[in-house]
Image 1 (cartoon, rainbow, N blue to C red):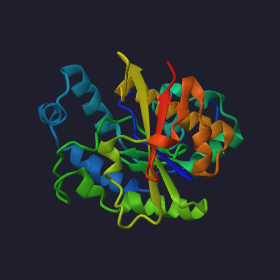
Image 2 (image 1 turned 90 degrees about the vertical axis):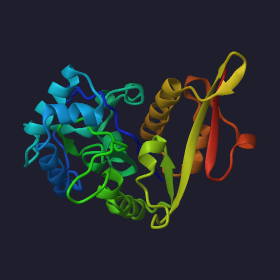
Image 3 (image 1 turned 90 degrees about the horizontal axis):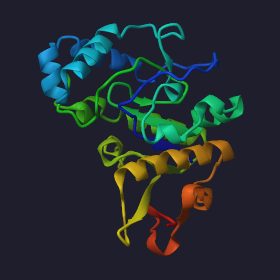
Length: 255
């Protein structure tokens, strides 16, 4: 089983003394992309990303600080850097070495700048959503730019873990990166619903947190088979077999 998450815009390093790290697999393409971003002015970045002056300055600074080689002195592991709704439900600071190694093998994170990241991959903080209409000399948008590279990484990881299932805990914007025709496995999409005004619906902020909770559940229990995720019961959620299909698994939160 391989879990896939979307990244978060909020990125801030959590202090954790863990010297082990890896390099992003698609780093060469990241460097080309960063070099292109460095050609954009602050005004162009603001227009592209539709962000405030403060965020524009921060993004511009991050873009121009991007450099290789990545080392533990100038960057940090992804699992200790991503924050936000989903990642706030995980406890990477408290994970054992064994749990972090499990996460490294069984969890990947989509990224606009890095294509795809493993938890222990080093990264500079960045801001670059996959859905942005960024035109580069090589491509008309980021989906085109990354092409099948993320799918190739996923296929390699599925083979390494002897898996046939990619468990999708990412947003629709990011899972579009996967070339389903070339994927050597099946995608299972996890859907979370919460009750509001007597009606069950997907409430984005709660669903993002639930994705993080399920990821945490998988890591601490070191789940190897996707089927075992059906026992997920944190924060009042439970699997609803009668509302699920082979491709979409439904979890509802108890009131």
